[in-house]
Length: 222
Image 1: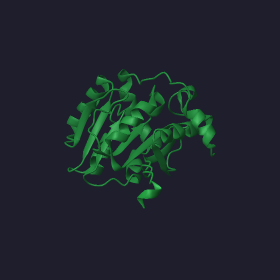
Image 2 (image 1 turned 180 degrees about the vertical axis):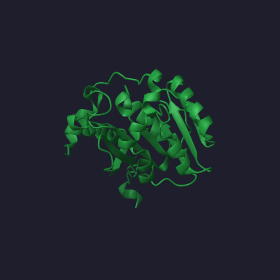
Image 3 (image 1 turned 60 degrees about the horizontal axis):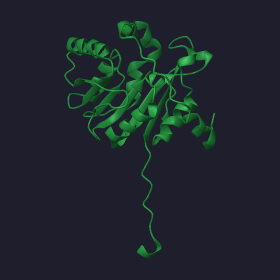
Image 4 (image 1 turned 90 degrees about the vertical axis):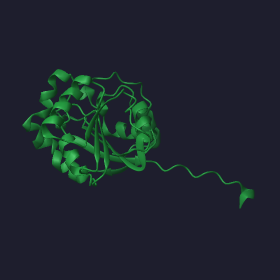
């Protein structure tokens, strides 16, 4: 389904949503073995073609479900920042990191609109099942643009907003339709560059920052 420019902007300009955070007391639910069958973590990370030495921002890391896969993919020279706004979630991740001896992982307590990372320090911003929880996604997306390297990417995986995908995940009323998400992200200065058809219950989108518009050239300067 392709939306017109006007329709896309209308979707993106809807009123801010109320954030819906996952209860950290239920963090262990995110680690259930049954999740692997539909989340396909190893295949997701492989499809991103990460390189040794890459720096990854796992934004809204939750229980750190993807952290071991990301850690392995970027190697000892790389770095994974496991980022969350809930200290209880980060405590869960820190225990996992210690148990698995993941020396290239750092936990970061963030704010909703601030990852607390340095400018142009990240090769990939990675958000899984996070976008639908955001109250003001535009503010966070703006921050992500500043922390990505010029050739950096933003990957968003989130639950499809249709009944056929309602076997797992949050209630349909909490989900964000793919078309609306794309419109919001593109309005924040990103460009959709890849849609990966891998997951049954989630869309899997890859964005890059839109190139800066060329500076206007005056007639007399030629």
